[in-house]
Image (cartoon, rainbow, N blue to C red; front, side, top):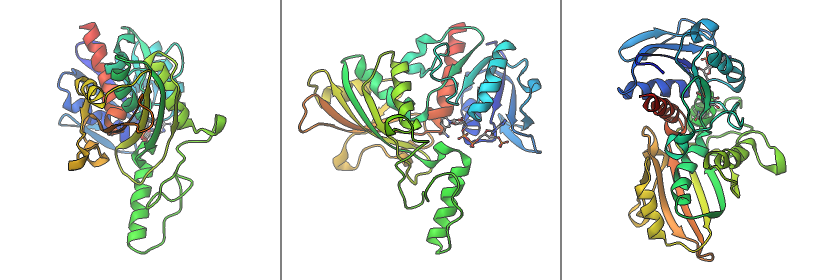
Length: 337
Ligand SMILES: NC(=O)c1ccc[n+]([C@@H]2O[C@H](COP(=O)([O-])OP(=O)(O)OC[C@H]3O[C@@H](n4cnc5c(N)ncnc54)[C@H](OP(=O)(O)O)[C@@H]3O)[C@@H](O)[C@H]2O)c1
């Protein structure tokens, strides 16, 4: 990482790629000398960055060679093929895909939680799944104080988590439903998503849990550096941006809600919104467009004194993807400075 960096964004025309450009634009602390937007093909497309119009280029060796840092926000196959080459060329690849996340030689990083695992030098750094990031941001401050014996998570995931095409599908389905027309052909999901809730994100795998559910279990354990008895149900809901998570946490011994609320208030990047009698709790509309991980609805379990329930929401495109990737870059710059 150098003083004036050359950055490349693979997938610059996608939802996460666009968010990366937005977040980089907001962070004046990141010294960008040149920015290369890359996608499948240029096709005459352009992106806007810090007052400039930049032509989108096809992903190729030329676009990656000489880049100090390359953000990968395309597909697993693209990351698998190209991220190791970035390292060969002497750069750092920050990968938003899931391809390298569980690779033991690749750090999986949420800087507020385990930024200490980052080391200087050319490498691949993986950024976790969007649902995992907001979850570990809340679990880590609890784990600093107590052991957790069990965690159960149910997600309420926005369609933007599945990319641009899924947002367009929800829009078209809503228009068709509200306008009385016929729904468009299904594409991204196995069922219509407008006016619906789909208890399946990703393919069904081991023990009947989906890929998304296993990501939550395995990525969380890797980031927190300890085995976690965590199981999840991942559900897609007709929300554009902002993933919700209903979480049951069981501690090793009884804990007071007020105490947990204080721990979370002190946590970097976390905002407590917890006064339900006055309608104060996190919602996707409140989380969309900012980098906070919002948490509320804190309450003790009525039957288990070691158990506590809470609700977490964060913008899946920002802290769940782009901002976390840029936070990783910021942490690397700080290390070298
Ligand atoms: N959406 C989220 O909340 C989220 C959160 C965490 C992680 N992620 C991960 O981030 C990645 C991007 O997701 P997204 O939601 O931004 O998807 P998206 O909106 O569908 O955008 C995909 C991007 O990848 C590019 N791309 C696809 N195939 C390519 C290829 N062969 N070569 C070069 N570029 C290619 C596309 O370029 P064209 O325009 O040329 O097709 C587009 O820019 C995925 O790995 C996803 O799993 C997403």
